[in-house]
Length: 246
Image (cartoon, rainbow, N blue to C red; front, side):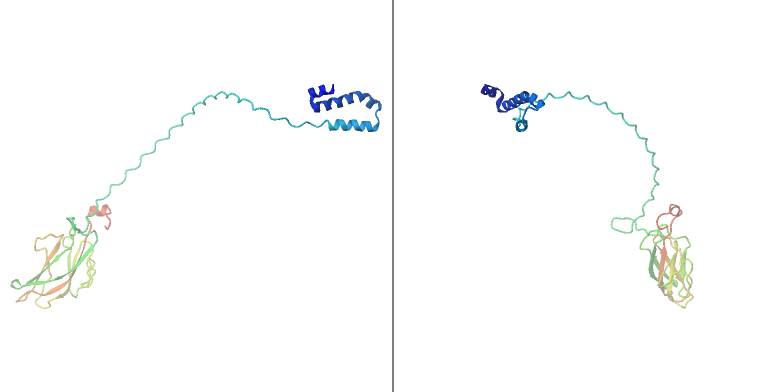
């Protein structure tokens, strides 16, 4: 009979059943105190030994995957933001002034002196004996535009003092804007040489000056030499528009 029970319950099940039977049968004896102390101890040992959990069984097969959840609904589209305000139009820039003509170089038809720039050079008088006169010319390396101020040519004799318009000397010629200053280093001391004459010939006043000396010499004209300076000036329009250099 025990073999049959073991086959159905297994070894562990059989032990539990036996212990349960003993407890059931001896329950009254426990209550009445009918078991001896060794018997009580033995029963407790059997119960303790066979109340331990059995070994963990093998892992069961993996369950089949669950079905996919339903797709969530698409969220509503957000509201469009307000359009920003249009920026204010910027102020119109000022018209630029015409650029200056460059200095002389290959391919440039004009050679102009910049505003308030100074040219310097030397001069010497030549003789025309039949007229008892001497001439000399001053040719500006660059054109002076606008031309020097009318009647603004000044002659400073060898012993002459500088003036407000011509503050330099024959050694260091200078001129204020718009003026042509002619400094004499030497003039023939005899013959009653007069002050030089300007503007007695028609010439381009932006390109140079022609000067004539007269004297009372009976033979030949006076000898003279020195240096010169001319400084360009600005037109009224250039002054108003504050062209660089004016």
